[in-house]
Length: 493
View 1 (tube, rainbow, N blue to C red):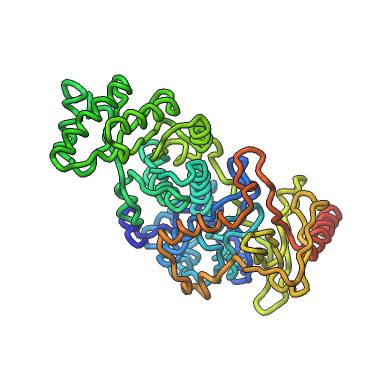
View 2: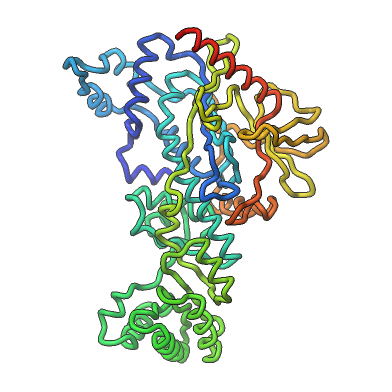
């Protein structure tokens, strides 16, 4: 993804929230910047009221860390910040410290394309407190958005049941990188191509497209417009047929298709962008078949999402390719994943870890203490449960999984059950040790992963709740630590 740097200034160190830098300065001033810390990036709820999420965005994280540094103009900008007393917020010694700042942490992550569930760490960072803290905002930006869009794309492609899905939401996306990241995540989630030409270049995604209504309107009539397009691009013709009247447009597309065939060319498809898509797609299929064009594709668009696709299919629609724009790239019905990045352990170098919890009146907002790994158990090719466990825990005799939000929901896993651990090494002491798979391989991984889960988690309405929870001894440790922390802070008051 090195080409990504062409879009931005080479230094993205200031792509962060201000409080990350003020905390970093505070750690440095307090002399605790080199304490070792562990942070986990997780999310609390499945998006879209669904049963799963698809991890995405790690390539952005890797690219960012490989080039992470504070450039001179970054430091000059920070030097211009002043407090209410008119004095600089950051002193010159701290800015000099930042000038030599290089990433030195260990980073483990769930590979992109992995199906994941609430509270499971997608990224774990272990290293100097100041470094692991300063990465919070940018990591959340990368992982939150792309995980959200990859999940939406996976849902759309599940609804399409193997039909091609083309992403063309660039014009409705949230800015330039919103569009690029959405195209990337959509392809990973299962879309077969994008209309975004730059995304195609940067990420190696197939690029597809048709023409707009303006093309038809620019000519004297629809037949003339179709003929002109066929003459200009005879090897890439999909006619948009609903500019004036869909049925008339299909008839004219068929007429030009016959002319193209006589000249040795083929019409790829016709596109419907309005009206009753179930009815019109059935009619279009019949008209094309009756005219001798069974291989001409029926493409539909018009504010589609997984629910619309499922409805059109339920009503007998005959659609070959689905064009998805706004509701995919903006995650229309759930605009934020709500991922979090929390400190879970800290220590002085070579001393014992101190596990940490954040206390909240909302149980779901109390983080898990410790240094976590996720183990996925499976039988006969189907995933049956995930457990979040502390890295030092021996699971050789099996384990008990406790639901994070309802301790009465527990699942016992026998010792003989097959498993794999999800977090893999990505950086060690600041050096990348992970070989990033191709975007096509990541896309295939999503499909293969979803095949290994019970169909219930893939339902759009009231999905099955996959057993993914916290290992019993870690749950007990967390409970005791919460009670102890509350008692200490109440006594302090």
